[in-house]
Image (tube, rainbow, N blue to C red):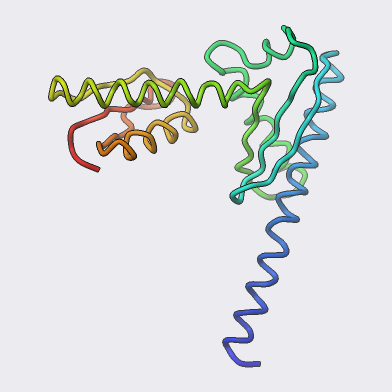
Length: 176
């Protein structure tokens, strides 16, 4: 077999195993979360989606006002972040593979993404207006990535500074 043929076969194997690994990751995560919801006696439907090389898990409710599910989000999404990490650990324990899954509850992340876009736009406008760096409030790694992407799309530069729970973004006039 030539190197080109070997490469093609290897590419086919990678393409076949990556989605099945992500599907397995989703199944393990869903099982873990279903058990957690059962223990807490919280009603919720779990949706699994694989896109862009990542597994997205959503916990949804048919009820308009589901306070128990909102409690799983916590203040500023802190409980949601912790639950996401626990779910990733459950996947690691079961599969031996580190997971980059994203957990959302009742659309919180989608709503927060819009909010983060607005925060990025306001910071860019302020930096342009004052000519000074703009430091944002601390946020999770996932949220910082969304803000970095939004700032770059608006043509400015951003960097993360600080440690641990105090890690935050600074937007500057340096062009992206």
